[in-house]
Image: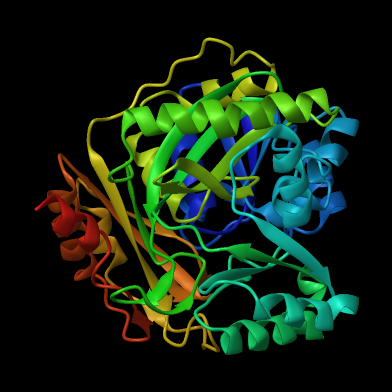
Length: 426
C-alpha cells in the first residue's frame, strides 16, 4: 500500500513509524512532515489546511489510503473531499467531527443519548451578561470551555467567581477567535482523568488503548495548559472493569447513536474521561488520536497498524482483536523555552544520532526542520523522547536517561512525567 499521512507533529511521526514497520506498506508520504519524519517518509510541503493540495498530492502519488492526524482538516471536511474523489481515507467526515469541533453539539448529543458527562450551560457572545450572572450562583471550582477548536488550550478550571468572570470576559471578547464565540460553563468533576482511544469503521468499534496525559507546562502539574508535556500507557488506576464500563456506556453508544442519526463516525475517537465515584464520565471527545498519547499507544501496539486501518476503511472491524505488548511506554516532551507562550525557533539540536543508536528509546520529532545537515527547532513542542520498559519505573528511568543524550540548551521539559502514578503505586 501507498499511504499518505497528513500532519507534521509527533503524532504523525509515530503513525509513520508504525506504518513503516508493516510489510503491507510499500511507500509512505507525509504532508508537511518534519525533520524526523523525512527519514521514513517522503515529505511534501503541503499544509494540513490545503485540502485541494492534499487531494492533488494523493492523486499524483497514487495513494491507496490517507490517514489524517490533526483535527483541523477533519473539521474542515478533508475526509469528505477525499471520499468524493474516490480515495480511501481514515477519519470522520466534517459532520461527524463536530464531536470535537463543537462542544455544544457534543453536549446536546450526550443528553439525547444518555451518555454520562458533566452538567453545563452554553453562552454566546451576545449573552455575556447572562453568563456573568450565571457564574455568581455556580459552585467553585468550575470549568469554562471554548466551544470550538483551540489547540488543546481552550479550557480553564476557574477556582473562584472572580477568575471565572475574568475567563468568561476574555473568551467572549474574542481572544480565542471563532472558537470562543460560544462557551460552556461546566461543573467540575472529581476523580482521576484518563484518555481512552477507539477505532470505528462507522458500524463497529474496537478499543485502541489508554494513556495518561500531563497537560500542565511545569513540574507538579503547575503552570498553564499545553498541548501535552508527556504521557504514558497504559493509564494507571484504570482497571479492565472501568474500561469495559466506559466502552459500554460512552464509546459504543456514541458510535451507535451517530450512525442512527445519519452521521456515522469513522476513524479514531479519543474520549477524555473523568473516573468519578459514580463511574466514568465524559469530559470531551476528540476526533483523532491524542498527541503525545498516540506515541505511547503505538509503541505498545503489536497488531499491524496498516492491516487494521485497511479493515477500518472497508468496514471490517467487527470481531477484530488487537494485540498489545505487556510493557509500559512513556514519552517526555521537549519544548522550546517560553512555550506555551512566545518562543523562538531555529536553534540547533544535537545528540539525536547518539540517541538513535539505543535499543529501547525512540525520539519522535514534532516541531523540527532541517537546516543543511542540522536538525533545528521549528515549533513549541519540538521532540517526544520515548521509551518502553516492563513497568513504569523502568520505562521512566530509561526515558530520562535518553533525554540526557540530547544537547539542546533552548529546550525544556518536565522532570516528573509518571511520578504521581509511581507515588500511588509505592
